[in-house]
Image 1 (cartoon, rainbow, N blue to C red):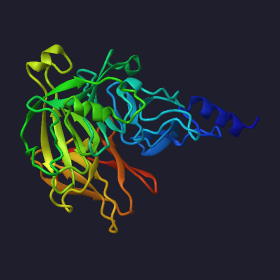
Image 2 (image 1 turned 90 degrees about the horizontal axis):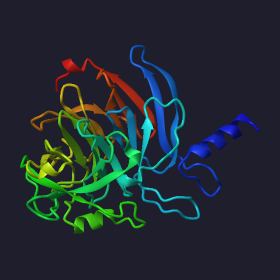
Image 3 (image 1 turned 45 degrees about the vertical axis):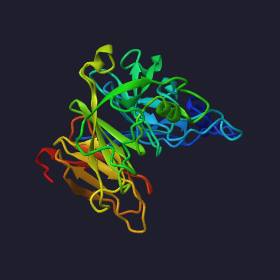
Image 4 (image 1 turned 135 degrees about the vertical axis):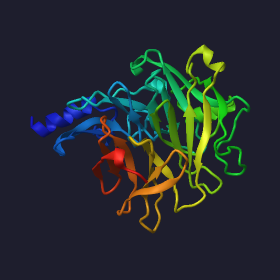
Length: 351
């Protein structure tokens, strides 16, 4: 047996799903081992395989990456399993991991995830025009395969609140809305209707939830085509001091609209997001047009927007995150594929 055949067999055994010919589906993740001191890539390998359309995802405090399928494809003659799940990949993995879906986190059109290090609660976005904002309370923090409860955000003051501002300006800039969370059932259902059932129970609507990042006790997430002009919004959620417990009703978490664009030149279809060491948001634009114009935008605490970088290829910046020590910014470009490493010093950077 050739080494190539042996490797293919190993890949198939660890992959989540395969096509009708028995080949693993091509979605997944790659791990890159990068030496921050020398600037040299020391290793790179496929770490997850057999998934479909892995989108954003997010880091965990315990050293793993949550990768999210932006697909709800059903098992069929061409693929073996249902899709629409989150998977966990260790940053310290040295080879491909066994692909185990975190089914308790729900089957839907996943986009991104972030974790509150204080509670271990995972927050999840959904890339749909009528999406919900979810949280997953694990049975044991850091042990996501052991299951937990999936919930959707609801405004205390109103059932079925529409944050999108497409027709009416329901969500005013800076206004804080007290929230509660409603339990969802049949989270691994066959139908692509989790968001519909959640909304019927009172959950709020969002315009294509995308990248999300937790920093300094709060999180920001993009809604790609939210706002009156459908150019994008950024929401901010500040968890309760008692988040996830019975006491949180006494002092609930609050959601507010941090930014809403009314000008393509200033902010256009925000997607992936992170927070720089200086506290600025860095947001990837994801809008394709005849003109090459996607940028990496910086946003200060007051909401002022500036251009940090421009992508000079006709593609999108498809991911952005910092190294653990905050020295290096990694940016993924979608196609042609590239990963860039941008060094600081970030503490000296000003807009």
